Image (cartoon, rainbow, N blue to C red):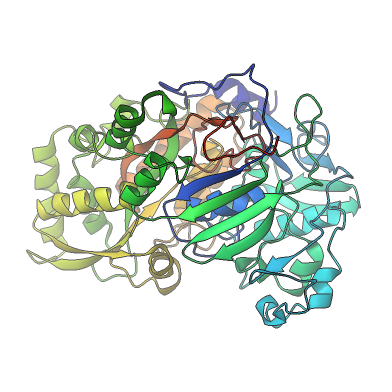
Amino acid sequence: MTSRKIFAALAVSSAIAFGGVATDASAKPVRGGTLNYVVGSKIPSLDLHRETTFGVVHPVRPYYSVLMRVNPNNPQSTTDFVCDLCTGGVPKPTEGSTKYTFKIRKDAKFWGDFRAGGKSIKDKEFNAGLLGDKISVKDVKGVLGTTVNAYDVAKNFSLIIFPPKGVPSARKAFFRMVKSVEATDANTVVFKLKFPSGAFIPAVALPFNAIYPKALLDKDPHFFTKNIYGSGPFMFDEYQPGSFVKGVRNPSYHQKDANGNSLPYLDGVRSISAPKMAIRLNAIRGDRAAIEFRGFPPKARDDLKKALGDKITVQESNWNCGLMFIGNHKHKFFGNPDVRRALSLAVDRWGGSRYLSKIAIVKTVGGIVFPGDPLAATKAELTKIPGFWTDLKKSRAEAKKLLKKAGVPEGYTFKFNNRGVDQPYKIVGTWLVGQWKKIGLNPKQHVQPSGPFYASLRKKKDYDVSIDFNCQSVINPLADVSKYISDDKAGNNYANYQDRKADKMYDAMLREADPVKVRKMMRKYEWHTLADEAHVGLTPWWYKINPHRSYVQGWKVAPSHYLNQSLENVWCTGGKCSHSN
């Protein structure tokens, strides 16, 4: 049995929907209307390859196609993957499970128009300066309406897996098993692996793996940080930074529904930027927006249900996402594992879970693996890890000893970088500040909008301690925990360290096919990450609550706010989605 099959057999879905009101499967989809939805973040860039935030996925994902994806009709499954740009299903590996051959469909086309600055590139008034200094109007016109082929697919995955210097890729570590990717002809893409790995197919199915035209990437791999152009169910129309992104139905979209009808059902989509939760709630309450795909805290759900009754439907799920705090390993004090361990020991995770779950979108105490997964730590295993002890008094006494040993003065002040998003960043961040004060520290929380926050975290690295996160889409533990290897190997490690022991532990685990052995290796890797080096300090895992207008049909909650966001299956029965028929 291959490692892929072994892990598929083990991966019983732990992301179950709770309390959800199911949509009527027998109802006939209705065409027309524009879906208005709110997004609780600004957009740092438009490039799905380099970004890690829902603030990009939610407004941008509907405009792109991917090679494979989680089944939009069964998003709770951890093993149900379907083709988007490929044909058939998951390809059967050959050559000892080290070769995957994907056949590319021939009916997917890039849009017949390109828009930027509110103008079509076909307009005389189009501002060519919006394309940058490496791509011309002629270059863009050359790809309009062309068929998406294997060369496009291979080029995108090459940049994701083997990014050249200066081209960011947040998920290159997810593909550490890949030796090469190439298009052998216009309809065939071949991935060759260094070793068999159950983490490969879930990595291919990530929603961030948008397919851009090769011809434009060849000219400028940074072009899509400021531009949107793809082959997805909706065609980009307009972007007003800080306000909205809107798109219209792609009449040439290649996917069909189960009855062979064309998709998408909607005439258009419009994502509205609203970082403050109160604004998003009021938008749904006042029917200016139908849904927020990320999630609301329990009280918001209860308030909406009380106010609107059956006009609101609620879908809930465990959530493959968690906040953490990281000490800058280049910092005078936070480069010391004893100091980082003290930060973790100060935090009351068990009591915090009970408190925070009433006011924030967090709930379950867990380790580095999604709770409930076969590879996740049990409570008995967790409580042995410093920072997860049930004796809080003992934990904080140990924390104070470690700070004294490291020479950290009483009342030491440091800058705590946090993101200006209400749920759960600011709530969890404020809670952490209170926890650290209990051991004699004096953190100053520095809350920034998403753009500057990411700049501090990823580029400037001018923080002392920062909020960080590991929010993944497909539940794929072997890939998800790659965040904790060295920052020159993991594109999403922002803690400023290289740890070759962690790299070796991770590589060995990735190559092991026996799930029993993998679980033991995962415990050692987890201990190294959270205890020996204390590279990160975890907070309770998130819990997804999606109250939405009941006229929204066809969308199903997933165990991640990154999944099921292409929206071609969504339709409306009434309300703001006014119908054209």
